[in-house]
Amino acid sequence: MVFEAFSIGAAFVFGLAVRQIGLPPLVGFLAAGFCINLVGPKFGMPSTTGPILEYIADLGVMILLFTIGLKLKLRQIAEPQVVGGALIHFAFSVALFTPIIRLLFTSDWMTAVLVGIALAFSSTVLSAKMLEAKRELGSFHGRTAIGILIVQDIIALVVLAVFAGKMPGPWALLIFATPLLRPVLFKILDLAGHDEVLVLTGMMLSLVIGGVGFELIGLKGEIGALVMGLLLSGHPKSGELSKSLWSLKEVFLVGFFLSIGMSGLPDWDALAFAAVIGLLLPLKGLLFFFVLLAFKLRARTSFITALSLTAYSEFGLIVAAGIPAAESFLVPLAIAVSVSFLIAAPLNRFAHPLFERFEPQLQRFERVTRHPDEQPKDLGDADVLVFGMGRTGTAAYEALLAEGRRPVGLDADIYKAKAHAENGLHVIFADAEDSNFWNGVDLSGISSAILAMDDLEAKLVAARMLRARGFTGTVVSHALHADHVEKITKAGADQTYLTMQEAGKSLATRALIADLKSSDN
Image (cartoon, rainbow, N blue to C red; front, top):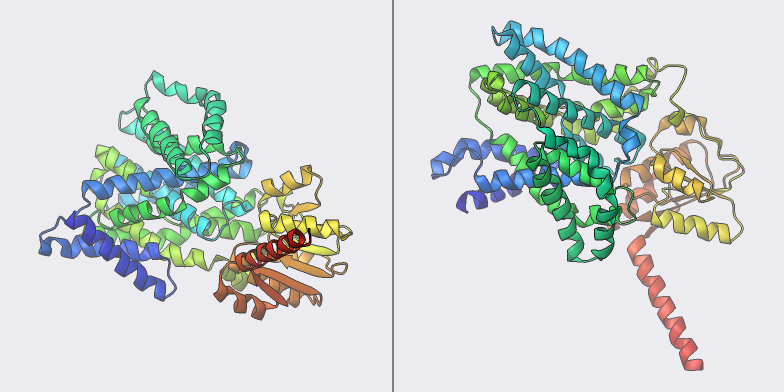
């Protein structure tokens, strides 16, 4: 327990420190792992991860994949830019990395191929964590990135099966019967309620049925957790289940990032490998960018998706650890993965401002024809814009409709937008952070706008772009935290309200009205 306590303390110190300079805490957790590896033996502690930390790391990854599955639709994975993008990028990446590894680091072509394969993958954990933190898992670029990562993980499992001699047995065919479990899983979720039993239900489905269950039939527990999430993604309580697991997943993932940093201290050869592979990291992103452009995605979508995929994968470490021919590269790969995380995490945080900075240069590569989901938006005869059609936005939309206004809802989640449209609401798929949306939209008939998105950056961009387009109407925004109010107001909002505070005032008003009515009677 002393070792685990020391690990938690180091993670806290480094996570808090990097947060003060604007970096994601996970960068600090990686640094804490290296620090523990370096100084741990001096205090009589092991330099590598203990069994408890490894177990926590595994739990964190499985719960993360389960929550990703809850937010996905199976048809998202089958989209051409997802399957085609993943396969083309994989083939070109292996062709790029293999000869470099063979020339500089090994005399064996088979080892070079295996290391090249390990480097071809992108980090599922980092990408999902960054997209989730920015609330972009449901956006078009977020769905595309996660779909590509899932295809890559499937490729990794095939590689492990072929080269490690661990071909799944006949029981693995049971994966095709998992959709038959859906009615039972839905019923379990219906009975779980809304309290701690719901959290236990999520853990049971992700770790027991998904994790242990899939390992018993010869498949990876991580894939099982993802499949369980996908099966439940259509349930009305899937969003609530995901939120209930949020804190648990965050704590467990600290163990994962610590374990990456603690995977080994490098020698000079490992440092040379990490330096060369780190220098090649931009090529990984550039290849994704041009591959996605080939599938008619716009420059902005291609850039942000590519940036979220520009990191080497923890799955590459699993591939290296599971194949004897590549095992000697485990520590160098771990250092390369850690370096890529340190580079990719801050870049992803500023993905949208980076695109705005280089937009003129990047748009020159954009194709004339566009993907159907990225066509210009027509607001029709609407007179009020409602950005973000979650619970707050939907309530605002319905209130406006009741007053005889003509609202149009905008949401960056295409499936949420389609679901509202199928229910008869005027809601379209559009991203407030997309400069192309603003360049092509006609605001002349709009008198006011409501910013109901949860993400602060999205509200700031929407407010600034409305004013930059010459919009003089009223802009009203909700805010989740008090320190957001001033920022949103400065960006251009006329009025900004703390949502929970306003909800409390509304409840108090209703209580007072009810008291007056009862006293009159």
